[in-house]
Amino acid sequence: MPGEQHVGGFYKNEDQLDLSFTPLPPTYPEPPGPPGFVTRPETYAIFYGFDQYLATYGSPDARGNPEGWGVFGRASIADGATGNPNFAAWHASAGIGGSSPLKCRRGKGDRFGIGYAYTATSTEYGAKPQFLFGPRDAQNIEMYYRYQLTPAIEVTPDVQWVQGMLGGLTNGDDAFVGGIRLNMKL
Image: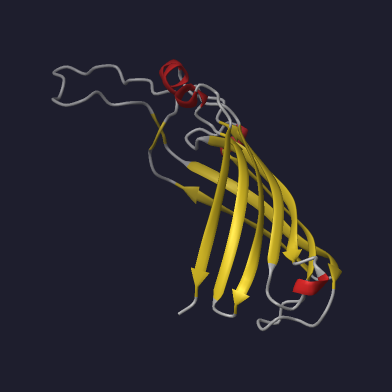
């Protein structure tokens, strides 16, 4: 069955704000302006992802992609799994998606997807950000169905459950979000 895998990453050698938000000790005479904060000299992340068809049916679409459905997954880690200076220490997501499983909609360009994602927040937030924002791990579940109304018009209803990273700002509440997207190719 068709599928793909990919690996990547980034490295940035530039001072970034340390998430502890620790002020630098004052120097005398003190320069005017706000105090400086401790920084980190570099940041990096690496990631891996895959897409794998489990079933194919019908002939390929206009772009040469086979119709069918399968599984996908992504995983990443940042700054030695501490997430400092990145806000996230690691992330993982997985799901099922592909062409419409409805026989009456096959070959018409419809797509569907159901996925879950988890993002572990940095373990190195300082006392002030902990108090102000209450950072916590985030979770998300999303379901969508893209209906190809005409060759130029797509309508996509979408439903998500979100448990965000800033629990202190939202009182720890979860959110259910519904939406609809309309794409028109002119």
